[in-house]
Length: 136
Image 1: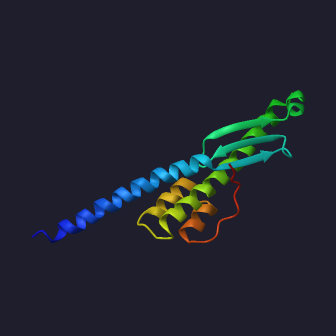
Image 2 (image 1 turned 90 degrees about the vertical axis):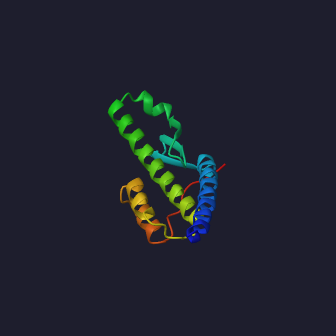
Image 3 (image 1 turned 180 degrees about the vertical axis):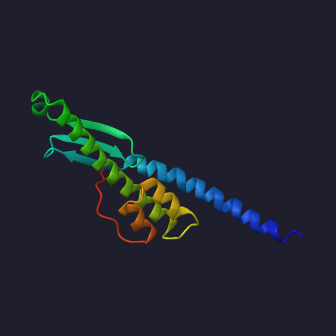
């Protein structure tokens, strides 16, 4: 009658361990950095592994040109590049946290997070991801 209780206890311990690993993962992602650039480096955007924008640098010469539409396009391009790199960092951290284990539903969740990108496919298929930018 009480055979399943030991299994439940084990599941609860594992849930606690996973929760603690997720907190550590958030700290790790908060400290990792990714930079995107556009316009030959005239616009740079820096994000962390949680995909929070930390900095946007625009070359004053670009602002002086007064071409608002071009400037907006460059900011969007640099931001998208930085976000893509941050998602790669996120996938790398999750992959290392799970130790390569295939967890039920994780591939679907990663596809939703990445929007079906190459990073999600690499994570799901346990392939090496492209080199990402990280520092500090």
